[in-house]
Image (cartoon, rainbow, N blue to C red; front, side, top):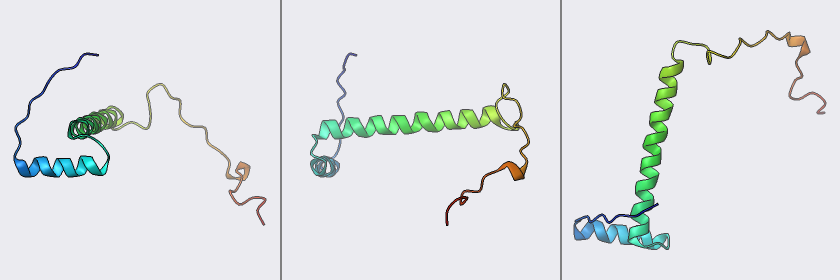
Length: 85
């Protein structure tokens, strides 16, 4: 994986806040910013995947290849507290 350079102009107050946040985590400002960007990118991709999955399954009761769940007789079920006195 290659790397590239990104130059960003920010005001002094923001840089000081970034330094403070990075120092609390024992990181450099560069590492802190990169990790924040990676986390934000992951959050956006995860949210998009969830939305796509919801659109895919909207209106259906489950995945198209999955057969319906068999009906189960309640008498055959084990209660969670069974055997606990």
